[in-house]
Length: 114
Length: 114
Image 1 (cartoon, rainbow over the protein chains, first blue to last red):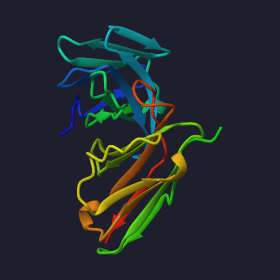
Image 2: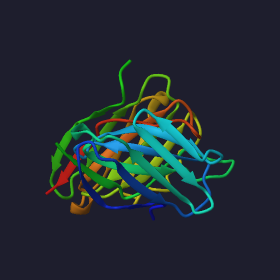
Image 3: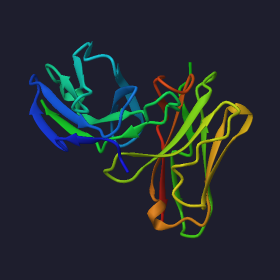
Image 4: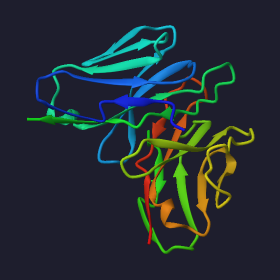
């Protein structure tokens, strides 16, 4: 079964607005990653946050992690039409024997209208 | 350098036929993963290879699915006696090692079973 659940499932905003996507997971983790997918094909890694980190920034992206609530959020500021894509959170299996196998959420489909 | 390469990009087959999907990971990456993505869904882990260790096959949905990784590089995912429910995008990813490393995805193979 999927580890992560994301909300909203779909989000439509105007260019220039901020977009916030949330992810919840069930078990302990070593890290959480966010990926982007265009046109239902390959995924592109956006950002990785470790379990001992609370917030991380990369350009217009801001990720937060709350391990007590087992949740993370991805904020895209000043959105652009080119940000239109599906966004997935992915968690590892946790523990010292972590294989790197990722467990993905169902994803949030973001549409940014020009 | 080149990214993860998958072939074919699209495959249409008849129910009951066998198919082989190929993945060329990034050179030097020791970890290789196969995922499956059904229409509008998140990614489902299938199998994981790390160096010369025994693969983690825990995600394979049935014994019709198998995968090999020859020489620690190229991998082939084989689906025998395909069924319509096997229709999906099959994604391959590689990473430098397992664990906390970022996974780099190929563009996927879209399999359609008629």
